[in-house]
Length: 321
Figure 1 (spheres, rainbow, N blue to C red):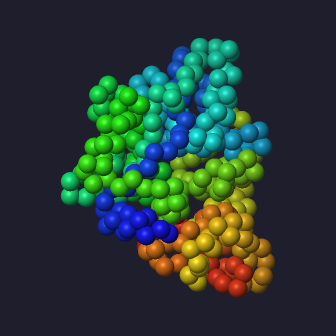
Figure 2 (tube, one colour):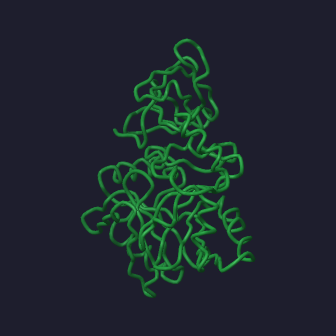
Figure 3 (cartoon, one colour):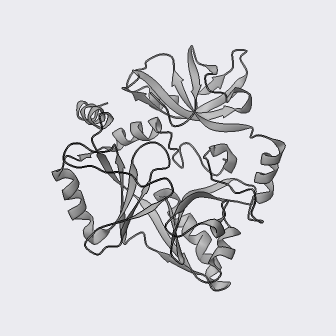
């Protein structure tokens, strides 16, 4: 980690705010048949979503494999879908194809809003209190249309800011001690908080329950694409593997974590126990921490696994240091 990044990491760990602008997709859905169509497409139940609340959900394919993970927000009689930049177009096309089938309207708002992720709670001059879990809080900007929601895991929150107000918002953050973080520092912070990234920790080979994210799937609502596979996994009792945290026993050189991508995990008996998907060196621990798929028999926190000549300890997410 560069000296500048390490200094900012330590300040954020001490409570200061770090921020980064991230490319996200934001798609609005409305219409009298919105709930009906949406509940046939995603894993969660939007019929139970109250105004100004949000829920995690996934778009699966017919085999229950992940097309995209989203956060679904309700604004009075409209819904908004927020997703990663890499899955934005996929989500938009998945929704838009149903506009020809009924009273169902889809609008891409991605170009109208910027997204800024904040870590930490603030220094002496500027403080941020993340909204309560699953709450949507309106944010005051010049045109009054922004909003903020809590991050999926760990501390921090995500702001969605009208692009016309973006420059002013960033100036306020910087003026009051906000620390702009690099992509490299973001990678450390997101892995420490257990936030999976599409294309790295999950993709279209991932079966949705393998993500292990609380509240992602409703097992009470009616049918949706991929529901049969996902329900079968649930009612048989467990997934074959799941994303977990891992702490490696030995410190590694700063350039080593990238070499760990897809490294095999083995049990004490030498059996395949999973693989690493993302890894970084954690200054807090002085060790490498990772996200990875761990097979069912080894999911318990504290399980010791082998990786090469070293060891890795299974941890629940987010990491608690």
